[in-house]
Amino acid sequence: MLTEVLDKLVSGAPETRELRAGELLFRQGDKASHIFAVDEGEIRLARCLSSGKSVVMHVAHAGHAFTEAALFSDIYHCDAVAGGKARVRAYKKKEILAAIAQEPTLALDYIRSLSREVQRLRLQLELHNIASARERIMQFLLLEADPQSLEFEVRT
Image: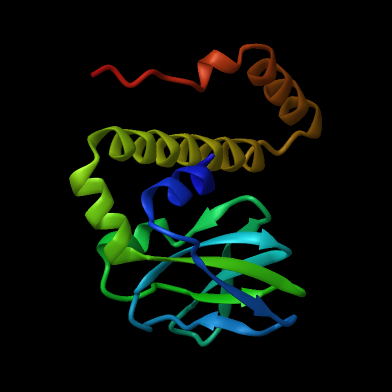
């Protein structure tokens, strides 16, 4: 799991932040200094459109990291808002990048975890785009029956 790898990448315990329902963790355009993981509750990532409308791009739940894309960005590209009472861990980007540069094994673990997260999100999109409930359930069951169809190995 990505949060376990993040814990290995940083020295010491990450900073913890408590949020109330509707409280902002950061705004779109803020300086991206941390990668976050949800310990409790949920965080909604929403992007402001040119029309002024806000669109939820992702909801991160307990046990999941988010803002990984900010690792190589100067700013956050969305707002992060607590969907209810939430607690998050904040990992300093500079510590993660330094650990990746110094520890190839940890770097591979991190890349592997990120790749699995991309696969999980693509599966969600795939299932979301199947209109028929019956077909969506059948596709889900097929993928569950053969989980290796979603897995891969990193060869070194």
